[in-house]
Every structure is written in structure tokens, then in C-alpha cells.
Length: 245
Image 1 (cartoon, rainbow, N blue to C red):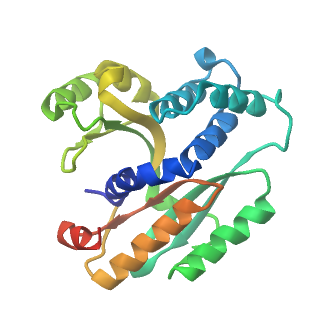
Image 2 (spheres, helix red, strand yellow):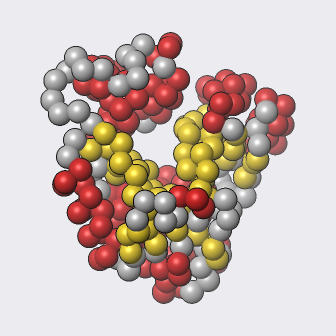
């Protein structure tokens, strides 16, 4: 399983605690606001449709969604959000991509850099690790969804790859095929569908100490208020991951 897939599984288990702190709602509202900058009508804005669907799946209130759309489309006032991408290295030389949505890059950039430094990582320059990742559609099926049935349906709809090694089936598509494959699976079977940065190659981290430091770094970055996505190319063996979790 790729580092991204494993990080999805870890985040899923800690998601309830994040939701209680309101972090999930806040971050999803920021994603909606960014998407709405390209148009406030979901029917005409695929990115906005995906952001709204993701928010609804996490039970974000409709009023929050409407406020976020208004803010992003310039109707709600306040400072404009921008999308920021940071690149860096973690323990064992793994590559890490961080996506943040911020109304003040002078606040966000030092926070990300400091978090890398405090947790055994190093922030790199633009382009330092981006070449190791590519944009893909990522669909995570609900735990109760039938893996075999969903896999067949996804392949028939044009999916590129399938990861059935975890508790939840993860399906990869070309970005322009994401909506088509998701629709073929049916809304009741899909937990989330997003375009994300996925690693093109992975680095095995089989040292328990380095693996622990790496996961702490990933979580610390993910917990920053402005950060909405953290992706890495690590591959931690299952036996080590189970010990650490």
C-alpha cells in the first residue's frame, strides 16, 4: 500500500477526534471557498461539486457550505484565500507535499517550515520533490461497500488502479475520469472522491524509530490550521505500522 493510502487509513481512525475540535469543518470550508473562486455554481464547477460532496459526507452543515461558497465567490467579504504548496523531506529521505489554503502566507509559511524542523524534517524549495508526484483522482469507498463488486464497476468505468489491501477500497483514476467513475460506483458506496497528488514511487521505511518520527511529522503538518492535505511517498511495513498505531 502506498504512503498516501496508509496515511488515509491513519487519518480515518483519528478523524472523529478532529471533527470534535471543528478542524474538519474549518478545512473543508476553506476548500469550498477556494473552489468557488472559479464559479459559485456547482453545476458548472467540477472542483466545487467535489468539495461540496466531501463536506456533506463529513456532515458539514449546509449553512457552513453556503457561507464558504459566498466567501470564495467574493460575496462574503473578508481576505481572499490562496492555495499554497510546500515541499520537503522527512525521516529516511521520504518526500512530502503539503497543500495549504491561507489568507496570509506570511503566517502559514513559517508555521509549515517550523513544523518540518521540529519533527525531524526539512522544508525544500519549489520543485524539490514535486516531480515525484502526479495528480490523480482518488476515490475511497465506504467500509461496508463490497470490494469485489466495486472493483469490477470501477475498472469498467475507466479506473487506472485499485488498492484493496486496507479496510477500505481505494480507487485511482485520471483526474478527468474521477466524476465518471465515482458516479458509476453510486453515492451510497463512496466515502470521498478528490483529485490529489499521488507518489509515482515509494520509499520503504523499515526502521521503527524513523517511522514513528515520520508519522509524528505527518500528523503535526496535518494538524496545522491552514493545511488541508499532506502527501508522502513512504511505505511503512504493516507490522511496524500496527505497533505504532
